[in-house]
Length: 394
Image 1 (cartoon, rainbow, N blue to C red):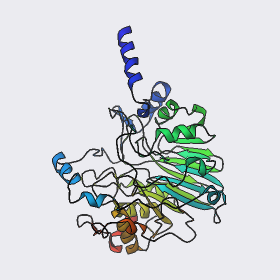
Image 2: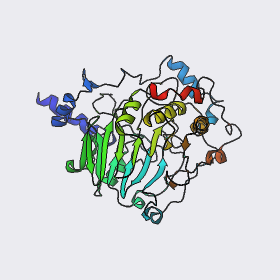
Image 3: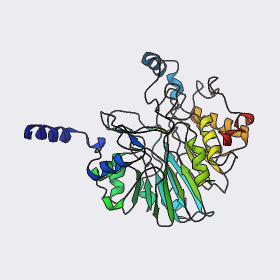
Image 4: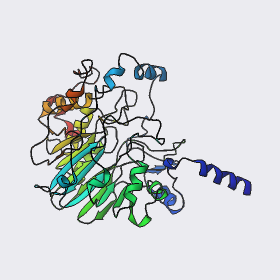
């Protein structure tokens, strides 16, 4: 028995630090008590989601590595960033709500005098290793320290493109609070975040930080960082409500009817930050196309084109076979068809949803002749106004 324990300790010592830590003790006991944990794993709303390529792996590999398609998956040059400074972000938001998309799913939301940082990833690669894995298509818009004090860091789930160990370690040296889904706190404690600064929530649970109420809401995805996908950490979307404004961050999710319920319980929202990149017909249950993201936004808003949609989870890391900037083109086309306001800022460009929105398709400036125009895939048609009239009715 002592030998087995010694071997187990040795294997844990060899585990890369970026893998984090598995929940145990009272944290694991709480996970087992969750109504969303069954048969040893967290369950998705609407049943099990396909989390690996469906169909033939050979077909997927042929598409992913196709020589004719690969040029479409990268920009011609470096994706531009906005030269935001600490002074820019130190000025209060004139309308009380300001959003700064920092690339991928990282967003700084300034809400009624409070500052929330969603899914901060400052690493060069979304990987447990610094020498391998998807690399940034654009530099980080500004150093993490240049953001200034942050009241709360919100993490949607523990995948590498949303939970970055070096970034968390740097934030661990500040006074910020961390709001995370159930089980994810084990990683943060392993990296130096003290337990008293963690707010670890199951779906439908809320916590207050200053004048903000943060609520973990359902999403359709999965979790895991190590070699084994244990599904012992939860994934979530988030609602953040201040005195005057409220926003929604989807994290990663496939489309499901839960958006209508989230909207009924917590909406409408001044702005939604919704994942609409890295989609593929090979994994339709865990990521959304721009059309599905627009449908989700309208569900959250009670079926009406209300508030502002900020597309996230695109243009920073190359994670899927689709052209790198197709999400931008498709989103503008789909939203324009129903009169929905969309903001497409350059990474690092602050904007206020109640003010002038950034709508210029900047990605066209860094697209080669091969991928300057992206026809919307015929297999994934743009939603028409008639298609979306019934969104609120499921």
